[in-house]
Length: 227
Ligand code: CA
Image (cartoon, rainbow, N blue to C red; front, side, top):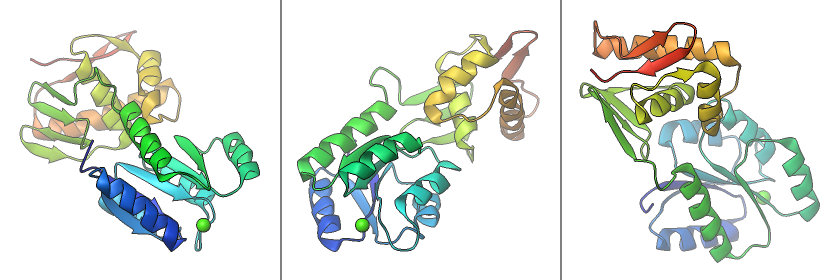
């Protein structure tokens, strides 16, 4: 878990420094922002493993930031709020945050929550690196390479490929894939799976021409084949 990058978005310098202090002692790499309107760009550029996001921020508030980031990223988000009554409202908004922390907090508590959320993202029994027929998928860095070539996948494509590669040769129905990929915040209905599969196939075919790695099982769904 160490060396993962955490993005702290906090405009109160004292709190930001305290968080930095405790998290760096745990071996995390840190980036800090004190404004909301720089978050989207930073998440895209740095791909942090987790974000601690304050609610009240100059630029763009934490709620809007969370919504914007969720449009393109599955990064775990822990929202930090100063008000207990805000806390209940936040829970009701279904922002897609992974956890909520109320100020004042103990830094130890924050460290524990960060670790817990990161652990949830990576089930202990799941392999972190999947290799099937020339495709290498790394759950930790969220990188995929095919025949040695790095391939850029959207979060949905990554989620789908990860499920298929965890169980090669197993046939998945569209509904099943939807369910399994929920953990990656799949938004849409079963036919949107088809368009994600189509795009995924295109990206794979560029590196492995002539090989049908993801096969359609007529009337059922899809499977990934390694040979
Ligand atoms: Ca604030």
